[in-house]
Amino acid sequence: MGDKAITSVIVVLTAIIGVAIVAVVVSKNSDTANVLGAAGKSFSSIIGAAVAPVTGGTMGAGTLPSLGNFGGF
Image (cartoon, rainbow, N blue to C red; front, top):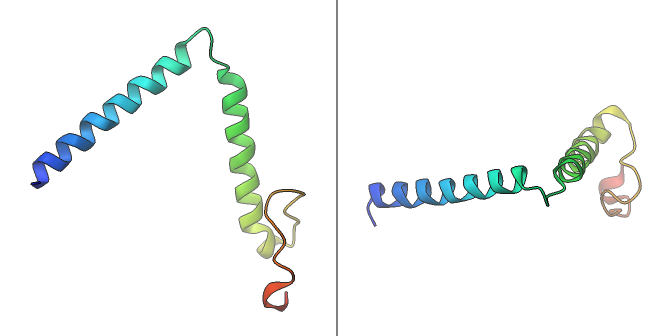
């Protein structure tokens, strides 16, 4: 496949995903508020786990499995 063909396929797939997202967001049957809230909590948990070694904070229960004091920290 040439570069133009690959680009065209990616554009079409992106458009299909975009239409699906809009359909879910505007649907009367969707639970958009809870989905967005869950995504926000997940993102916050990931950021907290990433900065915990630097800030000295804890990751919270259930975010990542324990590594058994891996690395001596």
